[in-house]
Length: 229
Image 1 (cartoon, rainbow, N blue to C red):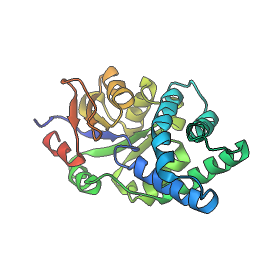
Image 2 (image 1 turned 60 degrees about the vertical axis):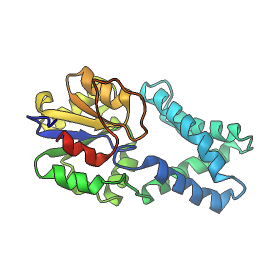
Image 3 (image 1 turned 90 degrees about the vertical axis):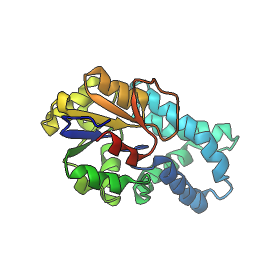
Image 4 (image 1 turned 180 degrees about the vertical axis):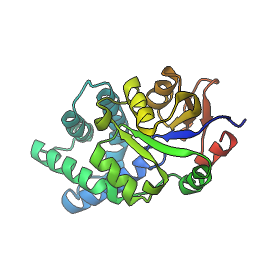
């Protein structure tokens, strides 16, 4: 059913438009082939993906710092593989990862088609918990920049989703009102519940088919947004 009265659409970036997992794997593949050829990429990724998600959850609630996030997700992944690597090597890999990640720019299937479709009738915006410099490079390198009127990141707002302050910051920056705006993202907690808690409507991009409450609007593919908007 179409949602009426919407003028502004706020998108999350990572795991919603920008295929973080695919781009991250390609980045690690480059790093390991250059400097750590004995690391089995497939095994590393199997360990890294859930560890990285857990670290990000701690980071979004300020339970660990930016530096701890960068270090812990690698250290814990290598430990889970019983692969011995020094702290200096971890720091080097962490920096190389940040430097190279925006060079890989796979987007989710349907990204440009749905943005072209929505761009005709709505003002489009981004709200992301990612680090400012990296996120801006991702958006520029993947040719997304021209679609979005404003980009709000957690460094600008001083807090991370689901903190209500970042949503209010984004609304203020875009001169949008809650009642005619909607949030689209992949995280039930950070994007969807965070938006709903401040009275902002939301659509869950449930690409991984996780269990979600029946009252939550959701899509499994970006092009399914056309049934709502």
